[in-house]
Length: 519
Image 1 (cartoon, rainbow, N blue to C red):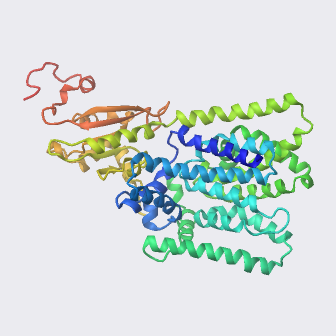
Image 2 (image 1 turned 120 degrees about the vertical axis):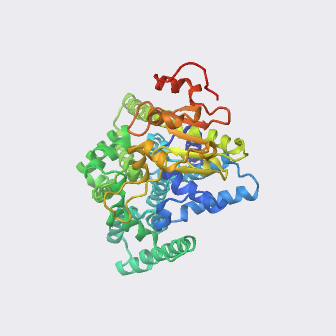
Image 3 (image 1 turned 45 degrees about the vertical axis):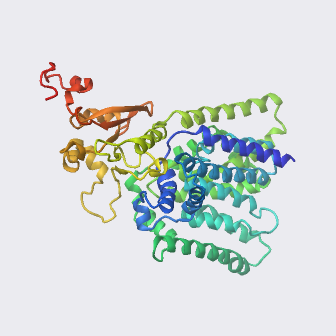
């Protein structure tokens, strides 16, 4: 009964995150899962270069596509459900992994508390990211690992995890050696009849699925490693110094939980014989951080799968400390951890970068209802950094849309610049070169851009009227702004640019009289 209550509590928190977390994190949440599933199910959408080159596996998108197909068969495929149900599915899987964490740690109260409160897991645990799936599978596999006794059940989720995200293998190599060292089975038997057999079965199934959907024989884990590690394509999207994961990446993901984690490290180092599991987990954490640090492109989500390992170390240390701590000390520690997670969790889940999520229902309404004078449907142009918003999965209307692409230099061309870079270097030049201005109906019916771009393309915006202004963030970055603006093309009779107060303010030398303004 206690386990049932614990799972109900965990599930409630994870499902609540689906409805609380209403902000934008990274493009892959949509472009590597929902958008792919939408394309598979409904026949229209956009596949990024990763899918064209075959470096992504279709396994995760196919799970979402199955949900979409069921909705379509039941004629319930509204855009709202297309967005909601995959998140509920991921939240449920995350809840099960959290439950397994609780069981793995011996049903400790600190373990339940620590798996529920981390801001980063609340923020990402219901997002349709491959990294979220990886973290869930890692936790499930760790809970079945034969820390005591014998067993190989963990190899199934671990193998799936490694197939989907090959870098996950770094976590499991030290653990596999640990298993080989302590197992009662002979090393050849364990390797050949367990490791290799299960690995081949999982890989074979994955390769078969990817070969079918990619349309050619392909091994996506190899393609992933070839492009991201050997060719270092990831550095095109940003690079960090080698020590970033140690000083910024992991401490940020842990947040205030860094303090009990450091405490756990100290306890494990001092009394390693009392913390054998934590000791082995720390080895895996260190090896993973060192290997990931050799890759230039780094992101917080790339170490999300280390979260359960770090929380185990923390929970074990806090549980032992609790026996000698006073009641006041226990409540104070819990309160500090709780508040330290709630504040960033609330801010990042509800305030920061909420613009793209609030934008999509407005674009969906435009896609459904807008018709110009010739009864043409909406034609939407996103003048933003590439993948700044979700796409067809959130609109679910087969209208024309275009965004600025940012494919890396796959052909190794000299002086290469992607389309987004070329646009932001000279916005008006790009618009004159790519967007016809005559007749007026040839222009996109709607523009989506950040407010910081408005002044730079005011001449082009003379043919548009402001339709929506949506709050996005609290500060301005190089290519983003505080608000997202949606413009609609002027209709016949509205073409005169001078009927807009904001344009007059930007062009003070223009005549202010009303004479001949509408001729």
